[in-house]
Amino acid sequence: MSRFPTLFKLIGVVLFALVVGAGSAWWMILGAMQASGVQNGPWYTSTAIGSAASDPYTRAQIAFTGLLALNKSEAVYFTATEDSEGRRLQGHCSYEVTGRNLAARWWSITAYGSDYFLIENDADRYSYNVASLGLRFAPIAKWRINISAEEQSSNWLPVKANDFFSLTLRLYNPSPQILGNLEGVGLPEIRRLSCTDEGAAP
Amino acid sequence: MKTWPLWIAAAFVLALAVHILATLLVPPAIMSVAMVRMADSGAADRVLHTPPPDASARTVVRPSPDLAYSICLFDMSEGPLLVRAEVPETYWSVSAFAHNTDNFFVVNDQQIRGDKLELLIRREEDEVSGYEGIPVSFAPSDQGVVLMRMLVTDRESYLELDPVRREATCETLSR
Image (tube, rainbow over all chains, first blue to last red; front, side):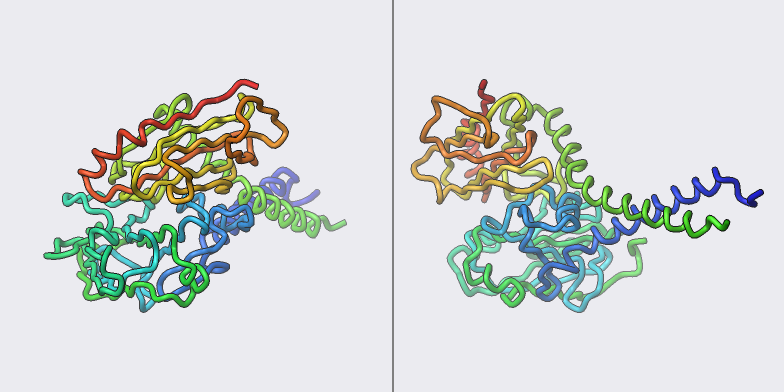
């Protein structure tokens, strides 16, 4: 007689399949865009967003993190979860995001919490864009956004102290120069300035 | 006879099946949840107009706070969908998404001749008479979402342009 009844073996097989199958799918989905997409400094995107040519992992990642995203003919979405030195974006740190105007009909930078939704704040400020930064008629002007949980005197983009966050750079109707050079076009730099010990994300 | 190798092989084959199924089912499952939420908000039988989202918006992840969204759902099993809209004088686009999340159609205000949009979304095999000349987009799935995005630069322009986008209609046509 076997030491392990068939029922136990069956349960073991099913548990293994569920954990390993679902876990490996989750791991592949979350890393899909970084693995197969385009990296430009701290920003990454995929030319397959919204497209029927999208691979299953990228499609699943977009469903999780950017449902109803437009395909690249209309908009390009860059996401950053790390600063320019590769450190995770955290709400207990303060950052400056700097760059020049971008060659698109419209662009914006929005902060999202770890749940991928807008971050509640008393200032009702969730993004900065080409208009709010005063750049619509200044094609080569430099700009700066200050990101932190504590209020800043200018161009403050609030985040939550005890949470990770990400940034999305949207480019609507980007120029052919951007579309043809997603990995090389000059995108904003994300520089960490300081961190406090209090409020570190778990 | 030792059966362990067979059990181990079965575990890996089943794990592969779970992996493939999970990957393929995630997009339509998430889309279904979002569509149920949209239908609960009223997007099933009319165009649902929402103001630019804030932190309380929880229907779709990563909403843009610079856009006002107008949404309607389609179900090709009930009939083709006729979308009509006035084009606001700002960035504005109409896009359509299949049940697997693919963006199968998009047009923006600068690509539309005139100040009105008419669009017929239908299955390739459906015959629709009386709407010749209207641009057609073929839906790759029976169910899906039509999403209109209108850029909002400030409150004044929003108050001015909001009535224009609210002229939009989504009408399910009988075959």
